[in-house]
Amino acid sequence: MMVLIMRFPLLQAGVWTDDFDKQVLDKEWKFRDRREKETKVEVKDGFLRMINPKGKWGHMTPDKAMLERDVPASSQDLVVSGIFSSDPDKPQDCWHRMFIFGEDQMDFACLLYGGEANQAQKALIGSMVQGAWQDKGHFLTGFDILLHFKLEKNKDVFTDYFKQKRRCLEADR
Picture 1 (tube, one colour):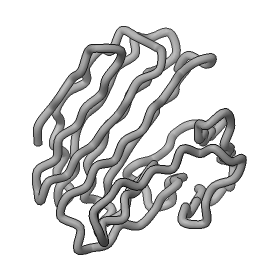
Picture 2 (tube, rainbow, N blue to C red; picture 1 turned 90 degrees about the vertical axis):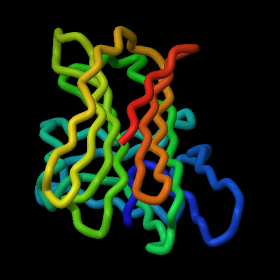
Picture 3 (cartoon, rainbow, N blue to C red; picture 1 turned 180 degrees about the vertical axis):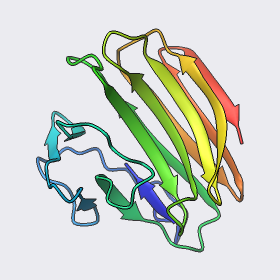
């Protein structure tokens, strides 16, 4: 199982977080880029940023640009959480993403928000299981400020959340 954005070691009870308080990534993070090697990664003001100037992340291609950490295969329960911001740059053909990948790259759960230039921002919640897409919705968000994404895995059930101020949206798998 592989996690994009954050990973929690589950060998014993406890909470692990990476607040990106340094200017470099911890050695547990692995970065892979597309063949063109054009993605920029930086840690700035406590936030992790990946920028691909040409876009087209390609979640269905094997050479997608990702920052990742491994999770033990024996993990049953998992929570992945991150705080995202479009400030100061409003999304312009931009998506903020969190994925949990299985052993097969065609098995994943995802939670995204963003949009195309001059279009309303939206969230996308879904999963891919054995190559079959399970769409849980493309909700209009109506905001472009700090928001919190959370993916929870409890055995084979995934629950996704995004939260802005006091509002929260939940979609069960």
